[in-house]
Length: 328
Image 1: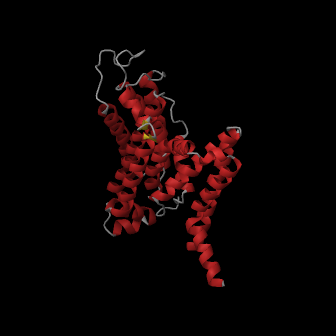
Image 2: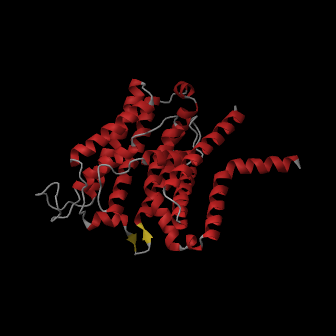
Image 3: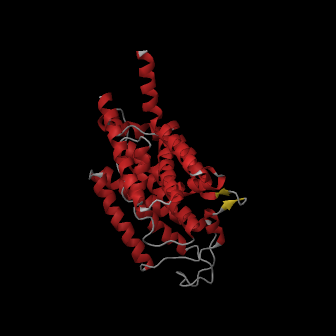
């Protein structure tokens, strides 16, 4: 009897977040049957795709016992530059009036390079100057947003070419392209975290940085790689954002860094370092998307979303601290 009780508690600890997601889905489907429609399910996945992609990179960062507060601003900066390279010829207030239409790969690569470079700067500062990740990424949070405002003079960049907005559309008019991109990055991130030396060393750095150094891990090198990957995914999220919205404003993605952190945290990524999974980040992002979608379907005031999200984040951290205390 005692053994069954222990097994039950272990199952709850291991799959608790998945159980919470299932209960949310069941409850919402009972209260609002339209929730389980194929259209709404794709809508939930699409809503979670942008901050979900960012949460994947954030998972690597938090596992390494770090934090990145800059991803929302990096999305905005890389997004406005990419959008300026992907406008139609007759666009109103075209950023580069005499520039011919560029192949869609140009704005995509531009966003990825800018995002990756911002992440590289974060990682370099953290690894080489030893300043706290909170401070380094808070600085980038301000700098990247400032550059976005300077670049655009505070105005949105719109009238994007169809090949760019298609990235926010639907494949065969059924499957949302952002969801396809999101799932590809989930698979890639899973492989990186679980099947490569990069992932193994990410866990090692977060678990015990001193032990990692003693065992021969080049901590500085891998910290730079971790933050570069996080920034790269912020750049990719910028492309998905541009495709979905059809324009990018320098104030875009305000607060998205907190949503990405929340998704990773809710999914079980420990701020104590060394613990976290890509699957958990996906479930965490899905919980936030289901919560928002459910509130919308039920006609609940949007401001209560923030209250609910805050409570869930605090609850997730409390659970994480209790688990770590028992482990110690």
